Every structure is written in C-alpha cells, then in structure tokens.
Length: 291
Ligand SMILES: Nc1nc2c(ncn2[C@@H]2O[C@H](COP(=O)(O)OP(=O)(O)O)[C@@H](O)[C@H]2O)c(=O)[nH]1
Ligand SMILES: [Mg+2]
Image (cartoon, rainbow, N blue to C red; front, side, top):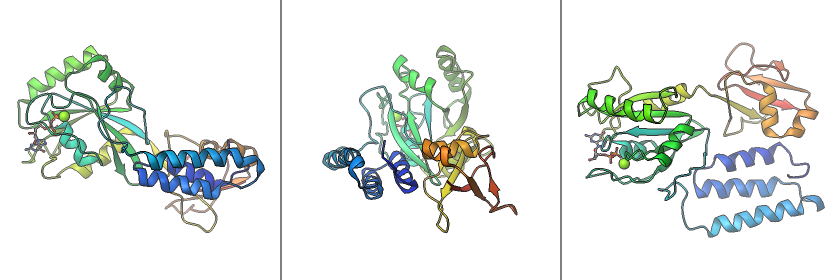
C-alpha cells in the first residue's frame, strides 16, 4: 500500500486496472510511478512498480487473445458470455465488438476454448467471452459466473430448433434464472429489428447491442474530479443505489476517515451542490471529493 499517495495516484491505478492494451497499461503504470510520493517509506512500493514495468515491457504477448485454459480472470466493469450453437456467429460478433481477432469458422466447432476480448462502451470496458459450442463443464462454469449471458440465435436458420437446443443447455447447467439476452445474429437483411438483432457482416445493430448490454447490466458510472479540473477517466463502476461512500472507499480507505464533503456535478439544476457520504448516485454523476 503506497504511503500518503494522493488522489492522482489512485486514479492512475484505476486506469491501470481498466487498461485493455499493453500500451495503456504501460502509460498508467508510468503515471503511478510519477505520482507516487518519493520518500523513504515508499521506496519499496516504487521498486515494485518499476519491477512490474520491466516485466510488462518484456512481455511479448498481448492479453486479449484466445486463452488456452478455462479459468478466465474477470477484467473490466463486467463479464458477458456469448452462448450459441456452432456457426451461430459468436466469433464474428466478438471480433466486431472487441479488439480481438478470433478465428471465424468455415466448419463446425472452430472455437474450442473460451475466447476473450474487451468491448469499449463509452469510458467503460466490458469483458466479452465466447463460450465454445461444445458446452463442456469448464466452459459452462464461466457462463455461470458471468454477469450476463447473450444467447445467439442464427437468423438465417430455423429459430425454434435453435431456441429449443439452447434451452436444454441452459437448463442442464442451471442457467435459466441468470440474467440473459437473446440476440438474433447474422441478420444481414434486418428481418428481426424488433428484437436485438445484429449483423457482424454489415455492422448493423452493433452500437444498439452495446447500449442494450450496458442497460441490461444495470450498473452506474460515477466519475471523480479534482477542483477546477476535468473529470477523471475511467469512471468507477458501481451497483445501482451506490452512495458517495462507496466511491470514496473505492479511491482509498484513508479518504473515508478524512472525508469532509463532496460536490456533485450532473446535468440537473442541482449541479454543484454539496452532498454527504449517504447521497445515492446516478449513472454519469461526477463527484469532487473534499477530504
Ligand atoms: N451472413 C452473415 N454471416 C455471418 C455473420 N457472422 C458470421 N457469419 C458466418 O457464419 C459462420 C460462422 O461464424 P463464426 O463467427 O465462426 O460462428 P461461431 O461458430 O458461433 O463462432 C462463418 O461462415 C461466418 O462467416 C453475419 O453477420 N452475416
Ligand atoms: Mg467461434
């Protein structure tokens, strides 16, 4: 734990954890090193950060490629799994929504291990996981632990058969009660626009889907800011109903002890008012913490 680190350090740390590329991670780590107070008791922490930097720079692999093992560390604000029969367009959708380049199948069961990518929604990163259509125990375990499941139904094939098959899988793995969204995939001709329908080929429906995913997750984004400065990016992502206290705690527990008040900025006529720790925040609120 850094000694007497200021808000800038914790903002940098947050950027580090939210980073989706190696470059972003390096930039955030540089900022952490720069903003860490330099004195005797922070020497150890500084050495650790520099070690981490050296390791990161030496790492030739990038993070968001197919992972050969089945345990996937949750990264970003939430984890969303894509489930569907083979050839339903999961890899193609993953490629369209994220920075990843998953192999698209010309034959069945191309994807044999879960594939992970980061999807950007505004200032927030959401982790997307393609679950292979072999529906093995380990892979389905990931779906069980995810925050939302997208079930892909191929718009070019018989809908009823697919939905029936998918229902069986969901039931077998006790996923019927989980938060889910049906997505009609490969809908190049826009026959299912009244549902959540997308085409990875034409790009239609992708932005809409991103927004629907965010709404379905039901989370809120709260930005922090310093006086007379722009808001800090990325925001803190919280459960709905979260209060100022949660944000303050998220920055650092020492901030809670010294908390005086916060100023709330949003697009209402109350923008700029003072609020206390118990104030309930809304999506896109900006708070300036005075401690
Ligand atoms: N027409 C059309 N074909 C698609 C679309 N998305 C994927 N495909 C095709 O569907 C097949 C299976 O795609 P893939 O993404 O590998 O499906 P997965 O097995 O569910 O991962 C491939 O031949 C893709 O080119 C789409 O939006 N429109
Ligand atoms: Mg695939």
